[in-house]
Amino acid sequence: EAQVTQNPRYLITVTGKKLTVTCSQNMNHEYMSWYRQDPGLGLRQIYYSMNVEVTDKGDVPEGYKVSRKEKRNFPLILESPSPNQTSLYFCASRLTSGTGPYGYTFGSGTRLTVV
Amino acid sequence: AQKITQTQPGMFVQEKEAVTLDCTYDTSDPSYGLFWYKQPSSGEMIFLIYQGSYDQQNATEGRYSLNFQKARKSANLVISASQLGDSAMYFCAMREGWNTDKLIFGTGTRLQVFP
Image (cartoon, rainbow over all chains, first blue to last red; front, side):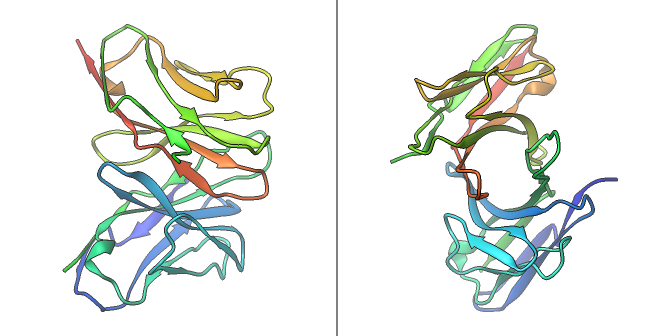
């Protein structure tokens, strides 16, 4: 089944303890992206990647790192999580060529709580 | 300034009726793409429809159509023959330029379909 897989689905952690949220897609999509969703704010883009070893900042990159060493994987790293990073996180991927559609396919989300 | 504005926090529509969800955008880039996503209460994000700034015709996907009015900078989503399963949050989003994947989302409209 074509999908974007995020792990874990739920995570509670303590301030300052490094964590990684994994994201993997099996659709050979070129582009991948991370978003956070907070009530009343919609989705805000954290980082995106248009190719292996190419990443760019979205609107809210502070406090996050990403890497794209392989086409299928795009992990999100929080080196020192803080309570204001408590949020629902989505990974997504999409095609960039052909007849489309060009919309992102999203993972199921990771609900992160930092205490 | 808000780049994507969804002015309707909530909308109600009766089953089988059509409904229009508003979205206005702000950009000075002649190349951009507009997207609509649906988020049911289960939380997943579902891509609905895409409109490129140079597309001559309004995009349509089944019961979804995008009323693209370039001069007014509006990209309203029209859902025809609403179904109970259409009850969800709907997000409008924009990508500015072609050599980027920076995506900006609106704050969403919650649609409730009643029998």
